[in-house]
Length: 187
Image 1 (cartoon, rainbow, N blue to C red):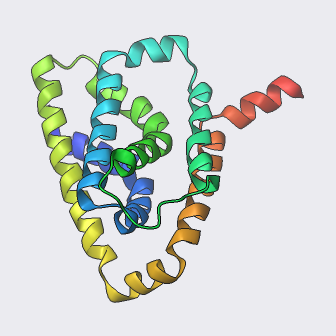
Image 2 (cartoon, rainbow, N blue to C red):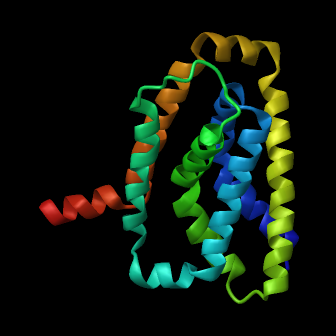
């Protein structure tokens, strides 16, 4: 098991999510964000390890672009939560956001990294990447506490988060090849 490759892979497929973590940490408790993020990471790793080859055989990459609907839904839905709550809603929103932003990349990138690994190596990878998830979440939380960042997040956080969700949803449509595939069908 190459931990350097595993760590680099984790950082590269999650870079776009780190910015979104700032918003999520302002909105939900650290526990909800950490658990939602961790569950999303572990779910995608398990899919990559367990059925990644089947997905590649049956679903082309462009089909995963449909996941772009999830961040768009989060951007435009009416949000009645005035403040973070202790319910599973925050955990679910964090996990859903993570899956919509990172599913395609994670499945595509971790499949070759985890292909052929034993169960013991897979479990070690899960523990290692769980630790990285914790570390990154705490680091992003610390960055979010910088006064200038706090001021911007307080004044414009909700609007910026919605803009970010729209951008992510549209990017997922484009990056997955869904847009190109649909254009080829209709042109």
